[in-house]
Amino acid sequence: MRNEAVRQKIGFGALLVATLVVVVPVVLIVVLILTRGFGALSWEFLFTMPRDGMKAGGIFPAIIGTFILVVTSIAFALPIGVMAAVYLHEYARENLLTRVINLAIINLAGVSSVVFGLFGFSLFVIFLRFGVSITAGALTLGIMTLPVIITTTREALRAVPRSYREVSFSLGASRWQTVRHAVLPFATPGILTGAILSVGRVAGETAPILFTVAAFYLPRLPHSLGDQVMALPYHLYISTTQIPGIPEGYRYGTALVLVGLVLVVNVAAVFFRAKMRKRR
Amino acid sequence: MSAGGMSIRDLNVRWAGEPVLRGLSLEIVPNEILSIIGPANSGKTTFLRSLNRLNDLEPSIRKTGTILLDGRDIDRDFGIEDLRKRVGMIFALPIPLPISIYDNVTYGPRLAGVRGKAALDRIVEESLRAAYLWDEVKDRLRSSGQKLSGGQQQRLCIARTLALEPDVILFDEPCSGLDPISTAKVEDSMTELRKRHTVVLVTNNTKQAARVGTRTAFFLMGEMVEVGPTGALFTSPADKRTEDYIVGRFG
Image (cartoon, rainbow over all chains, first blue to last red; front, side, top):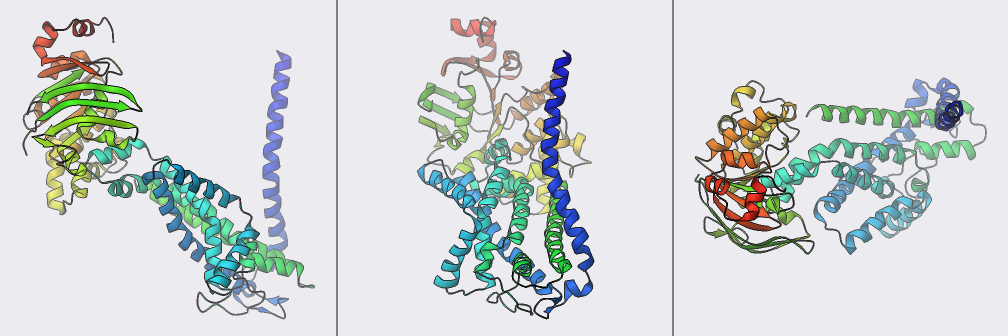
C-alpha cells in the first residue's frame, strides 16, 4: 500500500517535470528578450527609419512590413482555406479525389518553410513575373498557412452538431442555406482560432520571405503591393549575423517587437472571438 | 393551408445493402394522427425520414417504391426544399439552434423569403400560440432558445415547424426525453394540431399511441404487420405478434 503511494508520487513527479520542461523555455524567452530588449524600446526605435547602416535609428519599416505581410497573406489564405474546408466537409462525398486532396493537405503542412520560399520564388517572382514584392511574399506565406486554416476550419465544422444540419434541412433549407445559417455561424469562433495560429506563423517565418519579398535595407515605406518591404524576422536575422557592431539591445528590441506584434494581433482576435461567442 | 394525405406504395429501403423496410404500403389520411409503434430496429424512424426525404442525406441508403403527397410523387413532382416545407419534422431530442427564440421560429420562413417585421412577428405569435408556448416566452423572445427547459424546447421546435404551415407533421419519438407533464403538453398540442394538419407519430410508448393516435400501425423488423383504428388495434389485434407486443411479451 505504502509502496503504491510512493510509486504514484514518482509518477506524478515525472509528469510535473515534463510540464515544467515545456514552461521553462517560454518563461526564459520572455525574460531574455524583455531584459535585454526593453531598454532599446523608444519612440525613435519604433517609429523611425534605420540609419548608419542599421546601426542606429529605428525599425519602423520592418514593423510595417511584417504587419502588411500578415494582413495580406491572411486576407488571401483565410477565404480560400475556409471555402476549401467547407467544400470538403459539407459538400464533397468521401471518394478517391477527396482522399487525394486530404493527403495533399497533410503533405503541404509537412513541407519545410525554406522549400515554400523556393517555390514562391520560382512561381510568383519568376514565372508569374510578380518580382520580389509584397504580392509574391504574401502569396507564398498564404500557401504555407493554408493547411493550418483548412485543418482548423474543418475541425470547427466537425464540432457543429449534425443535428443542426438535419433541423435546417427539415425546415426546407437548401444545402447552401444550411451551411450559411446553421453551420458557419457556429463554427466561426473555431475558424478564428485557425486564423490566430496562422498569424503567429506568418509573422515569424523568415525562409518563405527570403527570396520573395524581404529587403535587406529599405529605409522607406512601400507604396504598392509591387514593392519590397523589410520584415522583422529577416531583419533580426541580418542584424544578428550580417552586420557587425550592432548594439545588442537593437537585436533584442527587434525580437521583442516581433513577439509583441504577434501578441497584439492575437489578443485582438481572441477578443473578437469572445465577442462572437457571447452574441449567441 | 390544408392537411395533406400521403400514399406509400411498395416502399423498400436498404441501408448499406441491408433491408430496413420491406414492401411497405400504407395510406395516411388527412387530419388523422397515425401512430407507429414497434420494437427498436423495426424501421419506424427510417419510414418517417422517407416521408420528407431526410434519408436522402445518407449516401448509403437506397429506396424503391413510390410516395405520394396529395397525389404527387415526392421524388419527381416536388423540389426537395418545397417537400420539406410541406412535410415538417419534430426530432426525438429537442434541438433549438443556438439563436433566439424569435430567430428559431422564423428560421424556415426567413429562408423561404418572408421579409418584413410585421409578417414575421405575426408568424412568431401564431406559431408559439399553436404550440402552447406563447404565454411562457412572450416576454423573452430575444433570449436563446437553448435556455428553455426540455419540454419548452420541444414545443419551440413544434412552433418552428408550424411556422412553415406544413400539411403533414412527422413526430419522431418527440417525448422520449421529457417528463410526464411536458409529455402531456406535447400530446395536447398534437391533438390540437390534428384539426389543421396530418400527424404521423413514431413512438416507443404504446400507451402514448393509445392516447393520441386515431389510427395505429405496428411495425416489426422492417414490415408493417397491421394497421387499424387505434381502439380496434389495441383491443382486438388481428395478428398474434401485435398482441404479443402490446401486452409486453417482447420489445
